[in-house]
Structures are given as C-alpha cells and as structure tokens.
Length: 414
Image (tube, rainbow, N blue to C red; front, top):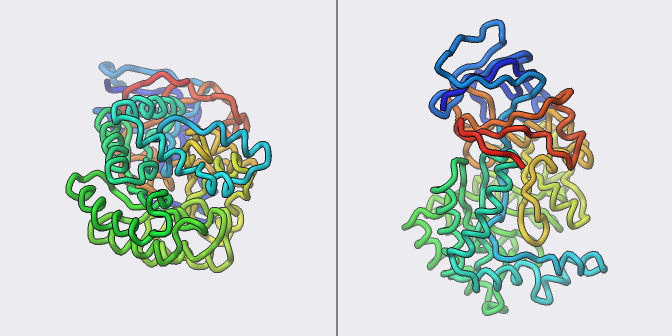
C-alpha cells in the first residue's frame, strides 16, 4: 500500500545525497526535518519534506504522525539468532562465579549449543529461529545479519545456512548470511585444529559457494579459539569463494585480529572490547567498520568497547546486538542504543547513526536501508508521541515504538 505520513514531529536520518557511513565528528550530526511528511510508494521512500510543501495524494493511505518521531529501522549487523534451545543454566553458573572460559572448557558455551543444534531438525530450527526474528522485527530491526557457527559439522553448518535462507525468502526485511564455521573447534577435532580448518575450507566452503548460502565469512579470532595464523588460513580460503570477512576480534584479548581483518579487507571487525592504541591506529583511514556489541558486555560483565576514544580520534562505529544464547540473549536494538549512551558515553545522535547508516554499511546494505533517502526501502520506525529522539535511549527498557513498516508494510510492534 502507498502511504503518506503527515505532521511528523521530526523525521530523522534524512540524507538527500547517499552516503556510505559516518565517522568521527560526523557521527554527532543527525540531519532531520521537523514538522515533516514522508511518501512511501511501491515499498520505497518516494518523497519527503516539510509540511509546508506536502503534496495532496488522495489515493494514498494517510497516517497522521502528530507528536511522533520517524526514523529508519535499526540495522543489526551481528547476530547468531539461528540456534537451538537456550543456555540459561550457564547464566546461573556465571552468577555463581564461574567464568565464560571455564564454562567453555567443561563442554559448555559454543560446544553446548552445537550439540543441541546437531540434534535438532531443520524444520524445528527454523520454527525456533523465526520466532526470534519476528520478535526483533517488532522491536524495529529492518535489516539483520545472521551467522552460522553452532553447527561445527558439515551437515549442521549447512542446516543453519539453509534456515537463514528460508528466513530471507520468507520475511520482508533484509537478511545477510555469514559462515562462521570457525566459531570453536569441535570435540572430535580436539588436538587436530588443522584438520578442522581443512574441513571448513576444502569441504564446506565449496558447498556454500555452489548453493550461494553465505555472503560473508567469520572467524572467532581469540585466545583459546582461533589464532591469527588460523584466521589468515580461513580468510585466504574464503577469498577464492568471494566470501568477504566480518570477524570476531578483541573480545577478551588483543592478539592481532584487527590487523589481519584489515589486511584481508574485512567489511567489519566486531566486539573490540579490548582495544590497544595500535588497534585503533590500524583502523584509521580504512573501509573496515568497527562494530560494538554492548549487549554482550552488559550480559557478561566485561569491558565495553571504548567508543568515546575511537570516535574522538575520527573512527566510525556501528552498533549491533550479538544476539546469541550464551553471551547476549537479546535482539533488542533499542536496548543496545540505550546501553551505548549510558555505558559507552555515546550521544543519542552517535548511537542512532551507529545503529542505522553505519550498521547498514557493516552488512553491505547502505544503498538499500539505514537512512531516509529517496529510493531506499521504506523500512521505518514510527514512535509513540515523545518529547525528543533523546527520549528513545533515555527511557531504556520501555518500548517507545508505535508502528514499524518494512517495505511499506505495517507490522504490529511488541
């Protein structure tokens, strides 16, 4: 249905000239139009401006947005939402003092999720995953990246990627798939990591390429998982299959993951809770997007990405949920935006830019979503009547969304 929104209190993230992402001081600039209108035609943003120049469109459905703010839907560039079951038992273990690493060493963590997923049928995995996807859509997410990595066998990794494809084919939001076979070394390859890396490169990647099941490749480049040499081996193999890197780096330790990602033209490097000066310097002037995952820091009680330091020296930053069963069991981007402001000292403007246009870039979707730009998909959030857009992060934990639209189609929010 074609739509005309009128009397919008403030229309945010208005970009008449397309941009890729914003960095440094630009992140604190959030262009907007007050007392605005927006036209949606054939699922695309067709026109916008001030109410003084609002067109008369009698055949369009008119939506009065008096007192309400409109902005592009959230772009969540890092999730693991296709998984089986949950890990609330480990949540309790951590409350009682057990570390993430100790849980993993006793067969918990990623290996726990992998065991559950291997025993779950594709149809059941799809059923569980679509519930999560629908929930985050209702919370305003209009573009999402989903990783494999809880399979750790040929069949289970392909099962995950097939589920992601089914979600992509079924739902109106933009979905990108990432192959994260190098998430952990499975028990059957304990002591034979090179054998597992060979399986990923020589057996799974060709099947992924043949069936076009993934857009990107990821590696958990971290102490105790995959080192820099392992990561480079994966990225070299992925290059021949046109799988661009989006990699986990610097979550618990800094071991050179940022630098190897940049060397292989990574679209993004994600986590970054531990950042040395040399890691920040390496990112300067590159096209690699740093991605912070504050929900993970909140849940695991680990340091937050030093956003203030990174932005102040001129870097861009994106925000994502890291939605997964072990370290960030929430796909709520509204909470992520609030947490970035409260715990990472980002301004509301910086956080909204990080969760929209920069998040879109971190998925290669900056030409389709992430801003109010003519020709982009009408993936938009309409808030309840609120005093200002700063009220969105301020009122953490309270839903301020009244309506969500994807390609012009309205869905009911939570």
